[in-house]
Length: 80
Length: 221
Image 1: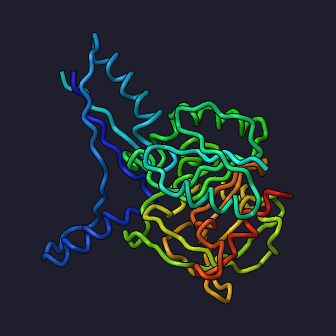
Image 2: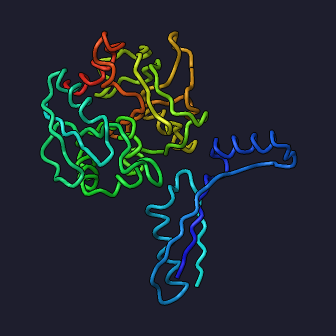
Image 3: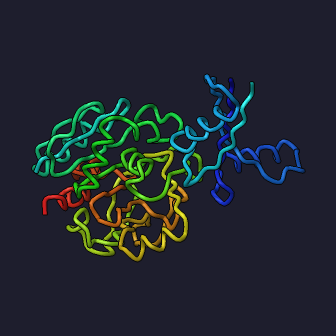
């Protein structure tokens, strides 16, 4: 099974990279951009009997290592 | 005084920091990240780029075998000092509260910077005066300290905020966007210390300054 983990800085935590890209987009003429946040995507291939089991395990990975709960949120998506 | 200097793959300030502690009279031994921790008076996590800073600074180092031992050592009251990447590792290990993010400017900043001593009621800064202004080099890309407001208040109340970035007159000057311009903190029990500046690089006036000496000397008291 494949898991996609998306990690982003929490709302309220300043994202300087997102801000810099926002300015760059404005300079390119994209005037409609209201906010840009940059995160990371982690792709995991794993063995699991069911989607539920895979999700549980990947969430544990995210809690323990992939995201820092002090500053980051994450989402997990499982693809079969 | 016996100092254990922890070395991870990617640590690069271990030799300078060993030299600095020896200069003030300590016996220093390197501890490789897979080694057991011997009996030390102080364990130092020096600066560098442990495990290439992959994922987040300090995130992988946190799970190395030696950090399990450092954790137990600290929980028993053992003294730990984390400098720069060592500070980031202590945050990721939850031995210190908060987390680091990229500098607001996105630049790697490497220069001498003034610091104000906010609290000296701890061993690390016991040789410094409260309000004293020190000049110590900084060298980091992720020194933008973040912590939630409740924890921050608690840290002020407990005297855990140790150092803040300032200009030569002591006015707040924030190089990296850190909350309240914080440069160094300690835990509630005051045996675990972390700071982004490098005291080991301010040990000799011919190298730009020697304010680092009294910081390291605090541990001898």
